[in-house]
Image 1 (cartoon, rainbow, N blue to C red):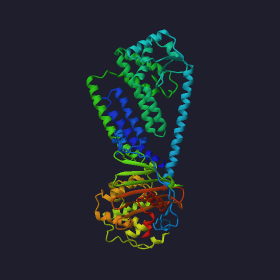
Image 2: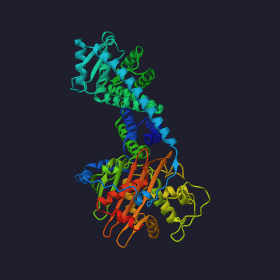
Image 3: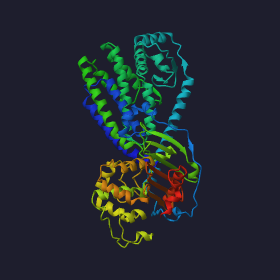
Image 4: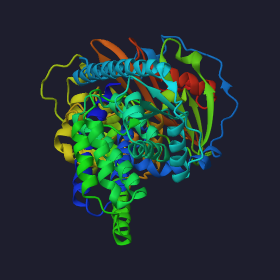
Length: 606
């Protein structure tokens, strides 16, 4: 919620810039684009307004065209259910064999602000919906009071207009005393409503102009455009530039219909058509209803339309060609800019897992996660197969906490801040709540005791730019370090999902990063928890502690079993006691029950 709102606010800044760019290009090409093309350009804007709500990032745009092919590659086995075999709490795991330390932090103020803004946004949407519903009910009462038109002369004229425009659809026409100008209403069952004064006071030619205009709205599906504009008004109730653009879109819609009518008329009739608009302008006193389109508009719009009619000349073939070229150029340009907007707008709290070539089995491990919201991911390197519990949670990004120290150490080695031979750092005397932190450290002791200050010193020497560059290089989670340099991996902006944890561990193991192999081996050695001649077990915990309560626990790693390697990530969340050590217990129980690792053997040599 909070994450979406922050991205939504950023995307609105970019939307404002893109709308401004659209206005600029429309003005520059005003003499080349036809009225209909200028109106259709606004559909680009309505498309841009939908981008912040699409679950896509810039890299994922090409995938939207390949989803049918991806589905057939996803293999879901019948759900496997593993029997629960929980080990007693007095095992070494519970007593500190897997050490897990975390400092308590306060609530994230940015998240709180995001939640408040989200609530304000939703309140505005509800208010707009109520106003729309109120207006819709008023128009519904008007519809109920309207009567089918009985005037035969107008029916004959109306039939002539339908034939002239080659429209075969049955569009009823009604008379009403409660409208100031003709309107067309209805997306699926359109109707035309004529005010009674129009029927009694207007000449046959004036009625013809009005009917042709309303039928142009039908021909070009303007009722659908009206629905899109109303939806945009609801979702972007706070954005003045969007409202201004939508007002201009409505004006261009009427001008496009005016132009279409003028193309049906003789040049000598243009003046009469403009006079008809002037006559309507004198009688307009009410704002148009939503969900309707009509010949009228605001006084400013009417003025703009009359000036357009006065200067109108039918476009030549050369102008039409220039207009088509310019229109296509603008469409391509804005489609090219769309991924930039998507990258900033997409909600990065969920990892969009590319499963195009993956074999995935869903397994039921709910008995292991009793009392926690949890997920578990296992990757079999030899079989190239995944086992996933709680797929939604497995792709949900949360703070990595101390699991990030694996890669922090790797970056420090790559930058020679520490080396495999010398990773010593002196304790500065600051008192910490854990005795193991209050002494000099090297990489192995700091990793085992999860010493925050050691890795923060690596960060300080690494620098924020280099850290961000390395994070992008390996593709770590949402790659967001903007919340502040030092704490970006502790209850802050950097987030990662269990699936991504496993993908990164696999890349680390096989050194797909292209780092020095000696540095990869050093990091692996620092997280090694068990080693024998034919078996090795690697792991790292992580805990998010907020206001004294452990609310997010990680255990990630991999197990080498002679002829195969298994990569895993477990994440648990709760209001209390959701620590990394608990996630480690759950993981070891699962691996033991799967007969992938012997839990008691794990602690026999520790």
